[in-house]
Length: 272
Length: 238
Image 1 (tube, helix red, strand yellow):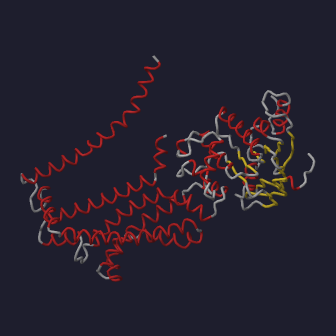
Image 2 (image 1 turned 45 degrees about the vertical axis):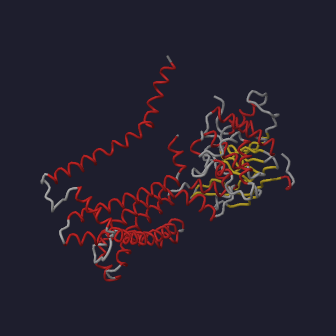
């Protein structure tokens, strides 16, 4: 009787692991239903063509843009802006956050202005930025840099501050000097927050790029959309939106893979 | 106990003071630990035992007084304090230099009976196992002195007994001196050569424990000493 009870108790606990794969597929159903409904509504004329084109039309337009090579040019330009902006804003954020979190002088000097600047909606700075850096590439890159700076700054700062002081002490008793403690305790301890900040920063960076590329761009996905709007090519506008969404999804997925690899120790934590 | 010549001492503390605000926790405490000697530091909670040990471990820059400790010492805290992002063997090897660091770490793990868990994450260990890793991490530095801050206080009674036996074995093999902060009178009597009672910020009493080893709670003489220490700590016989 006891063994029977044990078996009953054990099997439900194991079940979720086996179910994990099929359940992922279930999550695709509702988006598919939405797309099919959209297609049907567009074909039957419930949705007017010039307002919302059918998914199949958007797909065909996308295919055309992709095969004609136009998409690649614009995509590369958008990606370059995003990467440069993220690199500038991100590295600045990590360096300043680390300085503020680790040094009292840094905290006093850096944190108050950052806290104040955070309250400014950075997309509202566009007019000022145009006066400062013009309407060229610098504007797009500064917007991305500004957008990605704040999430990464705050998460890095909090990640370092939240490190268990007792671990730092233990490292000290193992003879680690300040630099070694930074490398073996502070950096790995702050890494989960840093990854979270990076994911938020990338999201904010894409958002800033969308806005930036609508100001006098000659290339980029945003330009593609603005140009299409002038000619009332709704399919291209919707396709541009999709590309932005896919870029966001893809960059997020990449970070999550990197996160899972780097933070393998947390899986051990979750397993117990 | 007669005064030892200085060369026989591993620890010498004179006039140790530490205050938190207006509260004087340590008020001129003096103590010594001989070479290879195990000294238990007893005291009620808030008596400053841990403060004293932290000062010896170099973790309290605000403590004043003369503190002499050997260069090679290890610390075991009440919590294991392993870095969760380093595998067990890397935790033990933390701060070790040289090509044989990993071999030494695995050797220390084997000594505490965890030679096969070097590749595990700390989160995968039980409380007792994690504490044994913490002991290995202190041991691998070949310390002349171990500073133990209620090292087994958070463990269950059975695990605690095993850990006490393990520590006794390790001490016999390696001959390190130890300062054991504990509130457990039995633990002090099982492991220590001498018990000190910290009271009012000073060492108020010193009790030599001369019971033969290996010791057991049932040994004659154990009960009397326990009674005396408990009385001294303010737990009189009912």
